[in-house]
Length: 353
Ligand SMILES: *[C@@H]1O[C@H](CO)[C@@H](O)[C@H](O)[C@H]1NC(C)=O
Ligand SMILES: *[C@@H]1O[C@H](CO)[C@@H](O)[C@H](O)[C@H]1NC(C)=O
Ligand SMILES: *[C@@H]1O[C@H](CO)[C@@H](O)[C@H](O)[C@H]1NC(C)=O
Ligand SMILES: *[C@@H]1O[C@H](CO)[C@@H](O)[C@H](O)[C@H]1NC(C)=O
Image (cartoon, rainbow, N blue to C red; front, side):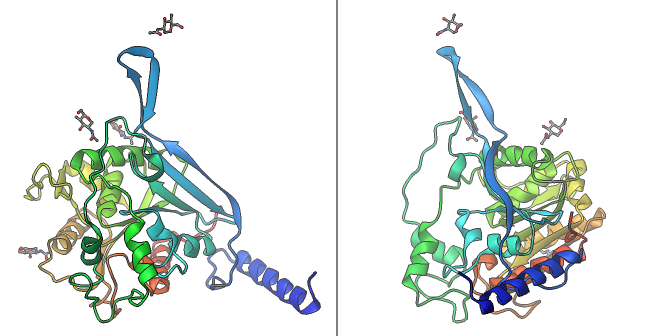
């Protein structure tokens, strides 16, 4: 039973919620206490193939589809945010210490959220081809790759990770899945993702969030999409960029999954038609770092063809300290969420339906 104080508190909350719903561009009321109210949640597979058994054509295998989990706020904004992880959806679900991740942060802000597992990974792991997982001793490599420090176990002094929390480190390094970083697989994943983007099932205003190798995949998806549903791409430390075939950029060696990828100019121009693209970098990335350099070149080319791409170094440009490879899971991911929301507002992507 609710006492008087509690019911007054409750009424206050309801009024606050109504007030925030009343404005179409609500400026506040999205504090950490705002409840997450969902209209629905669920998931579906999309894309993929149905292949016949060569020994018995009556038998088939449905395979190489992607899996999309969705969460629709009670009163959704128009723009959906598709979170495309590079290591596992977990990186969007929680902060490093288990605190709130981007999924809940953007549901609280009324954006429909989609968590995507591309073909063969996570919950879409029924592959048409045989797959093979070769165990490797990856933990210490993750530490450096995720920019927690120069090498395991030397943390950067100001790193936005709870460095004393052994459990947090264990969670970070173990919640991964096999990524299949091959050029063939990047095409397989982005074929399915482009079908998803064009299907209408993600809405008609989609922003892709990508990180590391999934930043590249988000760009490739936009190049393959035939609609204008994709309205924004935000890549946190994207590994791999796409270039037009007239820019004199050599494609990456065949087996290098991280490009550069070279596509016909007409396809590249699809990136220039996207209302807003942001390439973000954490700390300790010198200008000589090849992916940073590529992000600057790619952004300049997108803008040359009339697009709107920017590169932001969160340290040098905004004064943030200790951002890792995965800003949205960092201890200061509140700031990262605010920055993303600012991007959405500025580019007309924050309106309600
Ligand atoms: C495939 O199905 C058809 C129709 O039911 C049947 O006649 C045929 O024997 C089946 N083939 C095999 C290899 O089972
Ligand atoms: C699947 O197997 C075929 C045949 O071996 C190969 O050509 C293709 O690249 C493979 N696809 C992926 C995504 O690994
Ligand atoms: C886009 O159109 C091209 C050309 O018709 C087609 O090959 C491709 O499959 C289409 N992409 C999607 C995602 O449907
Ligand atoms: C990228 O690096 C090359 C040399 O490695 C340099 O000439 C070029 O100016 C750099 N481009 C950008 C946009 O920083």
